[in-house]
Every structure is written in structure tokens, then in C-alpha cells.
Length: 216
Image 1 (cartoon, rainbow, N blue to C red):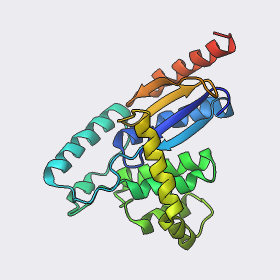
Image 2 (image 1 turned 90 degrees about the vertical axis):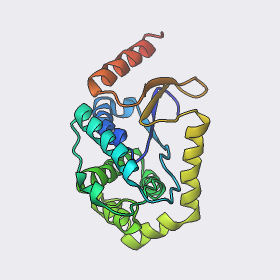
Image 3 (image 1 turned 180 degrees about the vertical axis):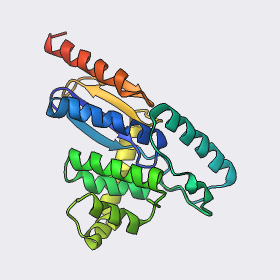
Image 4 (image 1 turned 135 degrees about the vertical axis):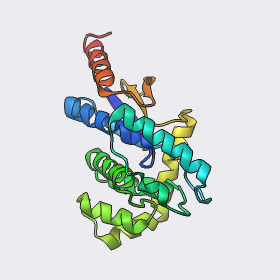
């Protein structure tokens, strides 16, 4: 991207990214086109095949409690009553990749919709049919069948795994991660690795943009 911009590395089944969702909303509303955002899907647990065991559930429960306390975001704890749930984040990432083809606005809106469905509504966003329903609810403009075809397409799978590779090559191991860039060829600066509230992030970005405008 030319000019100041952000790269947001996230996963639709990352609880801290759900906690960070209002911050991304704040950034989008505050800066708009003056600070465009590029979304990269990080791949929290892509390709997982083993069902979540009780120890795993307990670890996740602790994360959810901490995210709720830090961000106020809602969680539906009925999730932990599920048996045999396979926590594979790759299908949901593929779904967000499809939304991203419509532009960054639809991508961020759909990411938020998937977050809410998984964390606050206890919907199974590893299920293609559920993802297709969410795409319809988000108004992506694809019929259920068209969305499912795109979800199953090898092109979509490759695009998604390319995102994962980009995040890995950049050394990003945790989400959310927010990077700031000045333009083509310039190095990126880390805004945050992990959750931070909007009252910390937005003023930081304001000062950064002011410094760029002043030629510093």
C-alpha cells in the first residue's frame, strides 16, 4: 500500500481478536480512508483434527474469562458443553478471505460477524453451512450455494494458506497483531501484539500520523 496504512493480523476464532473487535471499529470510524487497513488471516489452529479435550476446554475457558474482563465482550459459555468439537480455524479463515474479495469494509464486518456468532451465539463456525448463513446475514451478495462453492474452491484454500505463510514469515505468532506502515518499501512498526484498549491505540495512531504530516 502507498501512504500510511495498517496491517491487521487476526483469526476469526481467536478470542483476543474478538476482544479487539471494538478497537478495530474505533480505528475505522476515527480514521476512515486516511488510514486504510489490510486484513491478513493469521491461522490460529488451521488443520486441527483432534477433538477438544477437557484440559483444552479449561484453558480456553480461562482465556475467555480474561478477554471478557479486559474488553467487556460477551461470551456464551454453553460452548463448553459441546462434545467432540474440533477447533479448526481454517474454514472460518477461508470464509473471511471470500468476504475480503469484496473490500476491506465487508471483510472487517464479516470477521466481526463470525466472531460474534462463535463467541456470543455459540454457533459452529467450522461448519460450512453455518458460514454460508452468516455470509447471507452479513449481506455479502452471494447465494448460499455460491458461497459454499467459493469456500470449497482450491483457489480460496490457497489464498488462505498464503495469508498464514505471510504471518509466519513476518514472525507473527500471536493475535491480534497490528502493524503500521508508511508506504511502499518502508519498514513496519508494531502498534500492538496482543489486546490493547482503544484509548491506548487510537491516540498512538493520531500522534504517528501527526509526525508523518510534520515530516518526522
